[in-house]
Length: 410
Length: 89
Image (cartoon, rainbow over all chains, first blue to last red; front, side, top):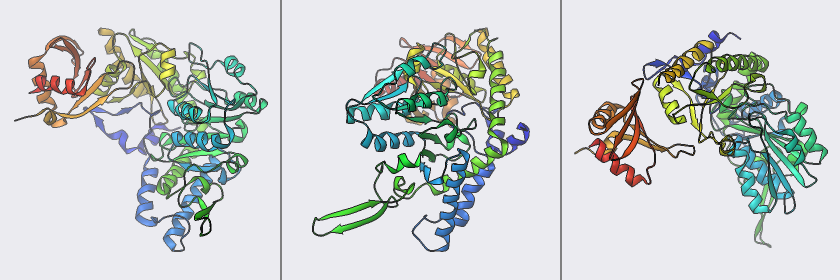
């Protein structure tokens, strides 16, 4: 990949922060947007803006066409069998909540079990905790090794005949550890359970093929993969989505709402997939922008994106090992992970580290990164996190390490 | 007469077990805020001229030249506002 050329597509990378060139290493939280995505957002509102579906005028037809073509692009991107398996949502969090509530409504109850891991983002824990209280099922947690990798033996040993669904991130948002979800999918299916894959940190960074993984659900966010905020995807196998009740009620998700004067109630029938799950006016512009982002990523090649990030991670970790006060958490072997490096600096809180780096124009995240159980397991109060994407380069890593080495003087 | 809000743009609780509070000073008033604080608080340590570790009335906190400060062990927003008033005004 020609990183220099790629960087030209991201105008924000030209700005300065606190008098220093911006170095954006908070990509696991959200990524920057290329001109192509920005232009598509502006272009939609300048030329095509109208509400989608159920109108006959030209603008609505254009908007509907763009919106549904975006769905097809997304379906192709993750190799879904059909675009009706792609539900547009606000992001990964809403996607998981949709699955937890709607699928859980008809499939989870007392005596059932749901299995997650201790490395999950809160968005793959809290919806299940809430639902376990509502439906009376048991939520179980699989352990993680000291280096942050998944304890597969523990995960598989906790899979029982009572397990109805397992929920696992393909890549940890804290350590960048890549989980073998194909192995877990097979183990889950062997027990008759489904698998929900949290793809928030994987879909933007590596090829993800839902058919190859045999994932029943896949959740991911547009804003973490060059797309706009407020748009994401819940993929679900068609036969599973068809058996689910809607998540929200309103316009668009219904086929018919007919008042029966005899009963004094409205009879309601649901729309077809995927609109059954898209109540109200969707984020039309966001979906179109996300498709542009996906085309951008596809043109570069996700294999190339992953290779670049792994190279950068290895390069950064090697240099960070030379910083006396810096401790990198998680696996030391970069082949096990994506471009995310959690670390701490002796004597300083993660927020001190992030603010110190901010002074040099380097954007890092600090805190729990919405994964408190994993931090508790690591016995950490919090961590600083550098996360890379396709536009980051070795010069930025060099500068970052130079700044970290200032801590050696303390 | 100046108030704390004249200097403070935002107060944010941080994520993590430390339960720190970050005070972000208004960009146009940050230099004045830093100068006021440096006059009143005692300097314990400085890190690369960027982080200033200070104490005031028995409480340690960190001030950053970028116009932010981290406070730890503050029990309530009222306590923080009172503390900021003493430091800034």
